[in-house]
Image 1 (spheres, rainbow, N blue to C red):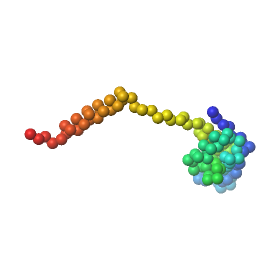
Image 2 (image 1 turned 135 degrees about the horizontal axis):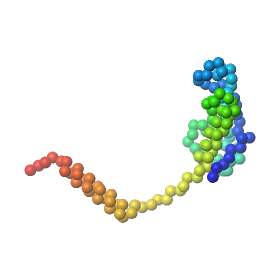
Image 3 (image 1 turned 90 degrees about the vertical axis):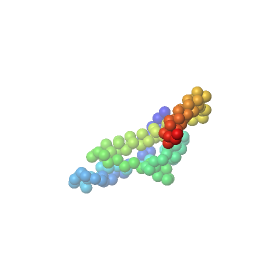
Length: 132
């Protein structure tokens, strides 16, 4: 199950990129800050809750996802990259974890474990000091 992010709910702001790139970096604002408000979005309620609980530094305390994209030299490519990264984050949150059911070890596995411990104990006991 994947929830699609509506591009109309995303805000882009062009910023100057960091790092090497010569004069182009100093003149052109080709990097992008993407802002996505989780609460105001049209995502399903369960996905919103999982996103808000997600342990990710890109999600602020007030529930806004902030993604910076500056990999490419053009603004549209950075926007597409940021949108794709947001969609991957939403897809990961849309996956409902399977509920774990507690099980008990079988009698055979318990016996094998105890036999292995007995063998190991015998090996270690044989390493002791020899007394006559």
